[in-house]
Length: 99
Image 1 (spheres, rainbow, N blue to C red):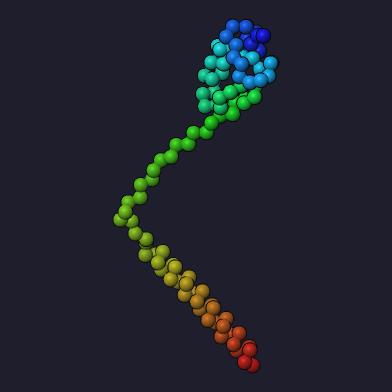
Image 2: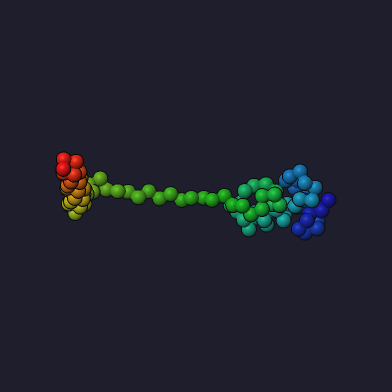
């Protein structure tokens, strides 16, 4: 058996059960150097699937932050508009029913 990449038969790795998936140590080390985050295993079976490494940074929110007054005014005005619409709708429905 020889390496499928360099055609040598020195230090062959048996990484899976397939006979034609032979890779030598030097070729496998070059492969790992090209794809350092790849999944371990046979290069033919696994391919170049890489492990995703996420870096999470903490966003520190100061404790003394407050909600701006504009937000309170907006919420109050929208609530008032919705309540007014509901009351007007109820009055109209009662007016129609009592006719």
